[in-house]
Structure formats: structure tokens, C-alpha cells
Length: 144
Length: 144
DNA sequence: CTTATAACTGATACTTAGTATCATGTCAGA
DNA sequence: TCTGACATGATACTAAGTATCAGTTATAAG
Image (cartoon, rainbow over all chains, first blue to last red):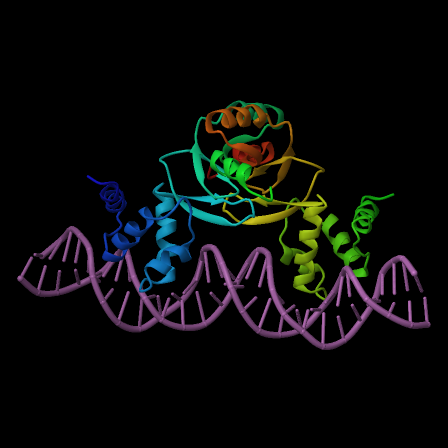
């Protein structure tokens, strides 16, 4: 059973319907690069409505199929989610996104909880930098 | 010398001018709650142009006077910045925002740098939870 | 295999956040 | 006080997302 079928199954399990449009959007999503916008998706599916794709992205966020990435410029993109809690390491040159979940924010969170008396329920962490490929490229660039 | 004067000084030092509008916007900013939107500011200054306030917010971000807060719903608000690098602890009930800078993300960052060969240049961390006040309130609430 | 209906769709219009343009106004240095 | 670069406000625009609504379709009950 393919990943797409799994998503379909999760949809029906939640009382949602499997439609041709949803199938087509999902097909496009898996072919997308590291991160994308709704308009990227729409460009590949000109006959699908804007609202439909936005509705679907919200659905897929609930289902943990996609998540949002906060870019360094403050804009939010979408991306296929690895299952469960994770964070993003974003290359600010090529835009590549890597996940990591071995985040030891937990100790920080405990520390915070103790010092502030907050009941911590979640966190959002994005790390920005430059991937090895982009660093290598800069080494060979002229103007660098 | 007041905080506002300090900001003015920083503006002139960077070659910007002190205008009546800027003074008025700054006055409003310091009277704002924990976080706010540009429209919150505009409501208090109906005769100031939208673009002007947005321009000013960008300027003030450069000057480290304000920063942006990512709310749990994904919307971005502004807030007066504590000087320098820090993160936000946001109460999802009352919206209160606290800063913390004793973040030991540095060890995490080092770990990431080693395992991914990224050159890490920055990070964004927001922690969500419920402050002690809101937790206490829930204890007394009926429907809880 | 029908059929009823709740869910889905696309169009449209709207909202919110922010940017671009441009003619007018004004700060601040010479 | 003059002057030009900087700042302003109006306007129009873009981008991201939501609301509404009439028409379509999946699906499950009969």
C-alpha cells in the first residue's frame, strides 16, 4: 500500500471522502520540492480552485501529512511532514530543508517550566544555516 | 534619557530622521500590550498611513526595538523587544509573552552542526504553554 | 441499483499582512 | 533660509488565507 493510499485511508477514517480532486492534489504534493506554497500547487493544477487547495492543506495538517516551515524572511511555506514531532533545519542559500527530531529541547523546556511556572505544551524550533553543498560552492565562487 | 530618546538617537545615528510621526508611533508602541498588530497601532493613530507604520516596524526590527512573535495559530504579531537575542514563551490562554534568553540551544546547535555539516547561523524558538495565572483560573472554573 | 444527503467543489468576494509607487511635505545640514 | 534627500500618506497592488454559496459527487442506506 502506497503512502498516498495511507493518506486516503486516514481521510476516510476521519469521515472525509476520497475525491478525484484530492487524489490529484496529493499526487502533486508528493512531487513537490522541499517546500512549496499553495500557488506552486495551483500552477500544476490550473483547474483546481484556490479555496480547495487551502482547505486541503488544512486537512492535511490535521492529519500530520504536511506541516508549515517558517522561512528566515518570515514567510510560511508548506512541506511534506515526517510523521510526528520534528523541527526544521533550513539552508538559507538553496532553501533545502532537513528534519531533526533528536532535539533536546526537553531539558530546556523543563528548565523553563520550573523557572516560569508555565505548563509547557509545545514549541516551535527552526534552525537556519548553510548546507555543506552551498558552503562548498561558495569556496569556488569568484566574488566570495 | 528615556528609552524613547535612546531609540531616536539610534535612528539618527543610522542616518534616519526624527519626525513627529515617528515620535507618535513610538509613543503608542510603548503603551501596547505584550503583542500587537500594525492595525492595533493604526487604530490609535488614525491619521497615520498604513505604509508608514509598516515601514517603521521594519526599521525598528533592524534597530532591535521590536521583534516578531509567531503565535500558535501561525499569525505573526509584533512586540517590543528586549535587547539582543531571545525567545518567546507564549501563554495560549491569555496571550501573555515572556522572554527567555537562557536558551541552551547552543549544545543542540553544535550537535546539529556536527551531524549535518550545516554551518548554523541562527534559530527561531517559540515555546507555547499556559501561565500560572491561567492554570489557577481553570482550577476554579466550573466547566473545567 | 437507486436515491438522498452530507460532503466536496470552484467561483467569487472578502480579509489581513505587507509592499511598491509617487506626488507632496518636511527635517536638518550647509 | 535654502535645498535636497528623506519621510509621508494615498493609492493600488500582491500574497496568503477565509467565507459564502450554488452546483456537483461520493457514499451508504434502502
